[in-house]
Image (cartoon, rainbow, N blue to C red):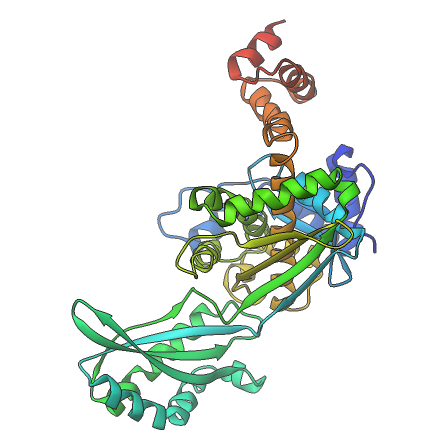
Length: 415
């Protein structure tokens, strides 16, 4: 089914829900859940966190036009910032002309770490590696589910770090976690093998926990953006120059990468992912050369079209975690019609690339505020007390005047 729907943003809520329900084959109950506020009640929230007093809702929208690895997607996005969903949809429409986003990803490998103290590092490393099969067998005994499907702990490695308290040995487990994000099983395996590591080495283990720097779960890809649709060769050149600014200046790179994460985190929110882990890993990866740089690369091909590339570490899952208990996250995953965590990761990162394109295109042409403030004006009008049938009129007047403020909105309402 085609993910492009003419004038989708102009349709009312019921019309949009009709389209999404048909696209994703949602049941009446699932549609009703989307019509509810937030998707969970207090009883569910009270079981998720401590000291709960209520729930807190964010807007849920869908980005259209996405083609990732030749498959059409409607992409659910949860974000409070205006223009993000529209911008991603626009970029995806331009990418679609040349086949959409071509994405790839590593295996779903999680990294677990065990901190070992009070040992001769060289001697302990040798002993641990000699017993690596025994360690792996014990780790895999902690998850019969992964073992049955050919996943689980695959490799043991050791590295020395130097600290103010002296040398430490860090033992790392490489674990194929399949379609899970993998935090719980990784932590369980690390804790499970710690006593054996102490016995083998004669040392003392301290921390036993996964690393959220998921460099063995890299997701990357590329897309071609038609130069004419972008506004011509000058715009393409300006986008490349804007990228080079970000790649060579940390102050610009932080904002540049924040735009990428606008897209990535919005989809992660919608599908119940650990957004803090995703953010931390991405920003660490941006600094992997010793200097904080752009997570994307932009250039032009022989025809003058713009080429965008992206690569980030990304741990996501479609089983376990919040997705098991949050009904809206389940529905959003169904809207995506994904079959694996790897597929989800590819879609999420494609949205990040799309979002980055739209942001730097705006910056390199008319400026970021023109489109952003037009949407922001609707929020200001609402905050000033405009009724639903007044919001667009007030927002349009403020945008036309270039005066977008609560006070101006109130003045217009009084008139």
